[in-house]
Length: 194
Image (cartoon, rainbow, N blue to C red; front, side, top):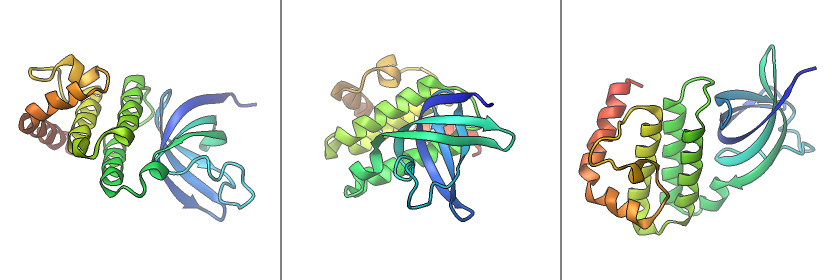
């Protein structure tokens, strides 16, 4: 009998597989980026069908077997897409951030700090005023790159900006040095060759 692992995860993507299965790409708190098979999840009678939608935060139970990870249970915590689907600028930012995570995070490696940063940033994205959206995206990307080691904590990147709580002060600080931060982000992404 296999051990059942429970972890929080963000569903980055879901691809149909076979007649009723779905291949999920999850960024989990405990295991990093994993690919999971959800058997029978596309059946109309499946109880898990609506729990693991793309762009959602879920608590999942997984089993690791010879063929890889398999989903045994899932509980929806928050569906970011359903909250933002009628807000085009926020939806675009959400898609960009998830694409960045899929692009930069490689393999099964635990990174709790990155997971917590991502979830806190997405929660802030849902509530931030529309005028602050570009700066919010900038700070989320900076924090993701910092947690992955692509950007160091050098001046003017303060520890509050990179790891602090999500406040309007952080956004004002990021807005003051916007050009410098955008240059740092572009250099980091260029150096990654991904």
